[in-house]
Amino acid sequence: MPPHILVIDDQISLPRFIEMELQSAGYRVSLSCYDRFRLPDCQIFKPDLILLNWELRCTSSLSIYRQLRSVDRQVPIVIITTEDVNHHHLASERAPAVYLTKPFSISDLLAVIKLQLKVESVAIRHH
View 1 (cartoon, rainbow, N blue to C red):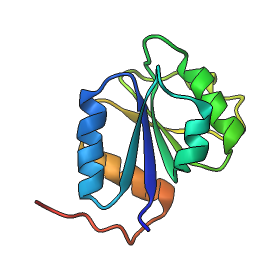
View 2: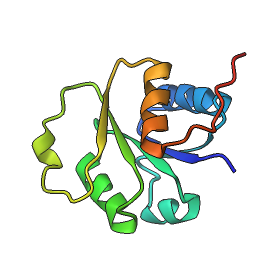
View 3: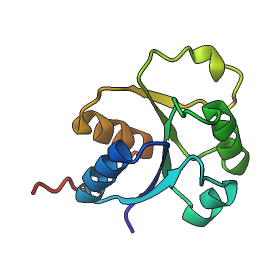
View 4: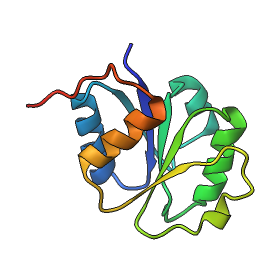
């Protein structure tokens, strides 16, 4: 079964684009909007990797990050951000995240995901 990626964001356009590209690359993808995100979502989706938008408008990304870590300290989390995130936000966390700064290319995103999952079996399919 292909790796499962959970995308948590408060926008719809970028996550839908990411979903389409990741599915094209052979991944299973679930989207969770921040206002509908509930901790049990992680237990239901059982993602192999989480993409988390760091600039959520109506809630704390750090709070969501900590909730995610309370469920699973091992699942890789890739934080997507438009700014140079001050790493002191997560310095005290025992399970650090990886950062990907916008704008990024899909090939950069796929490379980060592949590195985090250490998966070489997912084939990138071209249209």
